[in-house]
Length: 199
Figure 1 (tube, one colour):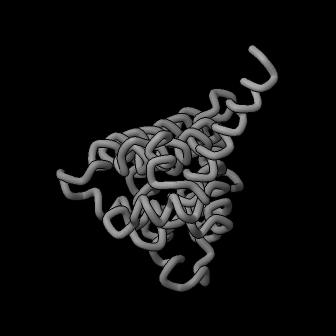
Figure 2: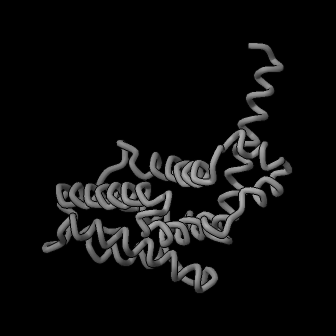
């Protein structure tokens, strides 16, 4: 591969990343239905046709944005080296991280609500995502129980579902309060009350 071809690939990857960033921002501002590919292309300094070279449809672009976000967060949350109480700490750390990226939180909140419709292009994605998120949280609580650190009467399945519901509900409150809700502190207090060890 020549140096010129490598530069071309690098330039293409950088442009793709810029498109994902701009799309994430606009989807967060206007929702999936309100966002225009032409506006995203303009923000990226390319033509509509140029954008479609990277993402042939709006649906392709939306799914790429969502999957990119989840790849980064998912790898970090589900690291095999992190189990039990430490894995629950990662959920709190994720809430803390989300407080620094309003655009991503807006995107997730708006599009997940829109995607409750079975006709929405991201419906299947969110069905899978919630199933996997709840399952991951349940696994963490089950590990905590095995470690002997879960309070009596706490059911890992119910606790996992509650944790994900609390995280998402806090994101809505945080957005409406313009960042005035301390998502991580509320989540930390919730988990701490379920454990028999310091958290």
